[in-house]
Length: 384
Image 1 (cartoon, rainbow, N blue to C red):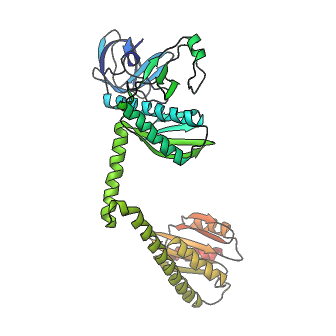
Image 2: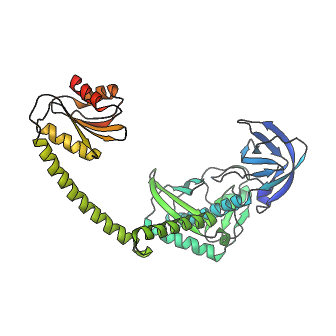
């Protein structure tokens, strides 16, 4: 099979002969051509999509040395078909894969770390490294990567002989056999790769790091390049603009404004909690000390407040078992507490009787009931 995506990576359309077409899974057909410009999934890069005549190519993969085109229609073996790639998607994959080589090459040169995982997803590109990168250094390397983009350095593709490979220093995620394809970015990176790439670094457009997390003893870096990066940044800009309007603050003052609002909100929460504490103490004083179960129904309490009132009542011995409920829609949120009855077992019994969910410890359980107030009260008194 002639692989046009290597010889002519910028080819958008081509003609090929159908060598084989067999029915596959889920109503799809598996088509093999004598030549193809469709890149098969590999090396972290997704397979190409597009058209073969009127048949939609849903995905492209490699199996047993053959490029398989997964189509939604049968194609007659022996016929010539016209292939059209979803070029925008392919070119964005080329931008992303090329940008990844630039950033990975810089990290490898700086830290000596290996790229041990690479995936080009629909939302972001992720790269896994077997060592920890400092955030400040990653920010500096991102700047350097974009300088390389601006320098418009050529991407060189070669297939060295076995003897030449033995003399070369190059990156590879696995042991390779047979013909090895090397992508060289002069002064930046030399890497074995089966993917498709732009001809010069300037075509990458932009390299934007989106985040970094610790992962399996190293780090996982997420990034985007080219038009996907541009769309992502446009989305961020729109969100910042909307936040600016909602907060009545200049865009450069958003963080400062949110920090101020957070502080004010925390202060209000503290005052509100004190008011609830005073209110609950007053309510608790209204109940006599008792060795019988106590069921209390309140309105518009949050789960933390339900728990707070329940704890106060059972600690003041207002019941051998105390259950506090607050209705939300057709559901009662509850907290059950006791100093003498195991609430973990008790709540399990109530959940079974009252279509409930939740649990907790021997002292306190919390959850929801899908039942009427009368049924809750009866169940508590019958099982306490």
